[in-house]
Image (tube, rainbow, N blue to C red; front, top):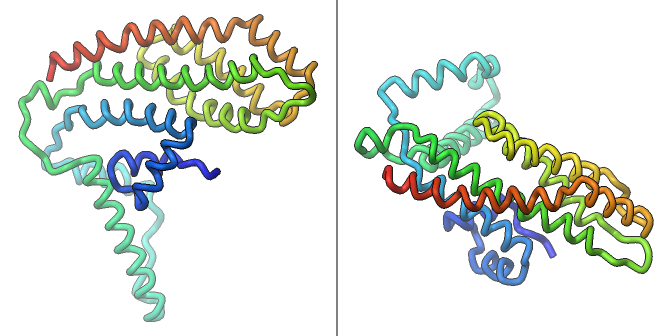
Length: 251
């Protein structure tokens, strides 16, 4: 079964996925995609509720000033033969349309808001981190529990768990950096420990013998990683609602 990518799930969230019925049917049948979609929904709901920062008349010029030094040197487009000229122009138009779509998604038409709404809200950033980390811990715990509870009669194929572990490792970097930047050392520490375990799983052989699986169980037990995940997950959930309540009071 072909799973839905994160890009497809995000488009489905915004009602822009081409085959909406097929996506809904897949979500009904696939527990993994349904769990991922639920995680994305929670984060995107918060992102969409954030106030739009104010943009003055010089914003466009400021963005261009930062981007221009990193752009490749301009080429003389119109010295190309006529057929290629139109092909490149068509590509440019498509790029502009995509940029306009993304700009509309990120910066919808400016609406006058009271000053407190427009100001950057650190509580909103904390809400996003707490929700994202909570969902991340749940998905990581599922991978580890599946391996810890496996009882194969022979060698065990863990390729599916390895793929999920590799995805989780890539995802954790942003959470660890954000937690460290905001001074949340408890979250950063557990994510560091979890990252090492997931990295080891993703780089292990795709088939584990009963002996190798037992060594992995002993490693998980010795490090107490599942216990750390449960404790941190509980703390995150307990902090999530107060942060959300504070943010709602400011709206």
